[in-house]
View 1 (spheres, rainbow, N blue to C red):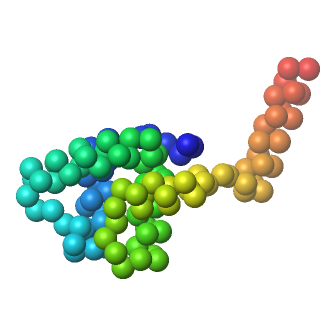
View 2 (view 1 turned 30 degrees about the vertical axis):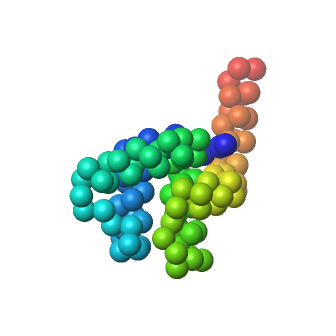
Length: 106
């Protein structure tokens, strides 16, 4: 899947922090419990890109009142498409640079 690094317990922990801001039920104050949970989730989310997981978290809480689970992230992350730069200015700049490179090498 496209879209960045794969999930590690460290990234899952950051995801839990954000989930806890959105959903009090996701807060884990016991560091050992939180670490164990992050390790287990990271195993299930190992093939999910970090940015897709963050996007999935946001999408989940936009449409659901339920606490998020790994399966929710996996299902939603499949719909994630990283933003592609299609700016007109960027394309014009690329074309100008390519033309200048051709002029210099001719």
